[in-house]
Length: 148
Image (cartoon, rainbow, N blue to C red):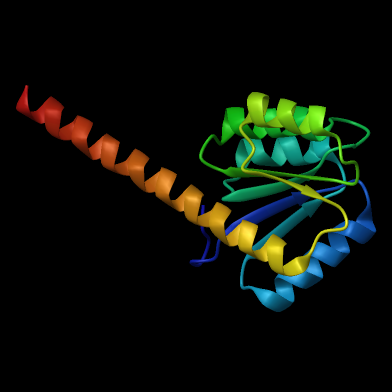
């Protein structure tokens, strides 16, 4: 959920240097609210309580791997766009992530900043549209109930 009109992006990676790089890039290039965690378990707890618009998760992490973490995100916040970031070009895991947790994109490290920014912009648009569709569906249901 946007706070002060700013999209909320959660980034999870067990490498602080990666988080620092992404945090700096998004802080310089965008006005997004960036929340970062080196612990996938702590991030999973956060997602259960706080609303986010998009999540970028590393694949290989010590507590929960990226697919397990993104599955938790999907369960608690299905409208949040999910992006998997990995240093390993593993087609099998990419397919698994797409099928199991409906990831929006699979990005390999090192990433290209312009492409990453475009993916995030498109992912935020996707989240916004999904949330709007859900709101419209709720209004329609209220109207149907009122007519019955």
